[in-house]
Image (cartoon, rainbow, N blue to C red; front, side, top):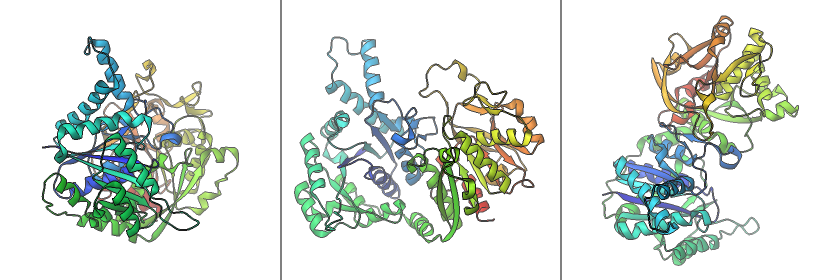
Amino acid sequence: MQGYIFVTGGVLSSVGKGIVTSSIGLLLKSRGFHVEAVKIDPYINVDAGTMNPFAHGEVFVTEDGGETDLDLGHYERFMNINLSKKHNITTGQVYLSVIEKERRGDYLGQTVQVIPHVTNEIKDRIRELARERGVDFLIVEIGGTVGDIEGLPFLEAVRQMKLEEGPSRTFFAHVALAPILSTTGEQKTKPVQHSVQELRRIGIQPDTVIVRTQRPLEPEARRKIALYATLPEDHVLSNHDLDTVYRVPLVLEEQGLPRLILSKFGLEDPGADLDDWRDFVERLTRASKPVKIAMVGKYTKLKDSYISIVEALKHAGASLGLKPLLRWVEATDIEAGKEDLSFIEEVDAAIVLPGFGARGVEGKIAALKALRESKTPTLGICFGMQLAVVEFARNVVGLEGAHSQEIDPNTPHPVIHLLPGQERIDRLGGTMRLGASPIHVVKGTIAYELYRRDTVYERHRHRYEVNNKYVGLLEEHGMRVSGWSPDGLPEFVELDRRIHPFYFGTQPHPEYKSRPLSPAPVFLGFLRAAAGG
């Protein structure tokens, strides 16, 4: 029997549905159940790959190359599992499939409508994923808020699933905001009440309401919400602000959320094994030795653009007893002269962050030059690694005008060039080098010190790559390729320890596979170097 847990949200987006979904997954997994989660995004884009990080935040890449919502990163980190592109369902995917079926004649003679054709497509995708993965529970997070016009077909589909699966195989958790007025300090429940009423108007009665609020939910507020939601008071839970999102599962555990879920499915609670998770949370919050990290990027005004990197630093910091203190540096401000390079004197290390396009490029290159010359521990990720090669080619090898063909197609020295086969691509969506692939690590390098393995698998998201024609020149001057793909593409570059204590570039994104209980080796090595180790 497969059970379905649906997580909806109200009042406003980004209220914490993804963390609640991840927490439910962790709590059920800790009881021995096979649990996975799927994110429904009501936008018409087929996937998140072509969206601006300012609008959407980070694009999270799965093992099989899906460009997905950042919430899948939370799911993977909390549940310590690898998900697939099928775990992110969008309106674009659903309507594309329905239209293709109509054109093939699958609906011959029928008038194709939202109900039943679109809703059936949604239900089929959810059920197929649950069967294919053999889960005990599939948690389905519906993006946006109740009442959004884009989300109505999805809410209608899950309403139908409750009828078709039966009430003992479905559970609805509604996450909504109870704001606190700054003038009176009063916890206001009316937004939650209206949100639940809108959900019920659609035909869905929540089994629990999880209330996001700044401080623990007050008894009177809980009583009011329970009354208007037609729920026992112990079905209204507090999801208040905490020192870390990784404590949320423990708070929900204390309030009995797993018991509510399992009782709805007619199951006994076997008890949880959360010792390792509690230990991680305590190590994370106890870590006290500060390491100051400069984060040099072009989307720094929305920190969620780099959320997996931030979380990977937390995982590594907890393991090492270090507390990363992040100093965000906008690369475009360096270019414009609004930010000088004196920040390097104030930090212990720096990460030059991923990104696409020309904006901020020269700012990143200037920062990389200063970081290299000052011998500040430096990590370049994806585009950050490519620009480290550009900077080295210009200022050490002496290749005037060296650049990436992405930025300057006519550069006399294309040290970064288009991947083979990409010149024939006529669509941008889903056509980069995506997902996990093997990397052969060169012994006797920093990369090998980090991974201690001959072959590793990391996830990629890029269209340009280091040009092999220049590798010999780079290595003659001290920049070594320390990881190779099976077909001969440079994956890692580094400077010899005799030149620089830690100057490492990675074409793939190691942050995607970092876990609270298993930090990414690259970030462990980077923080050790930042702490002077």
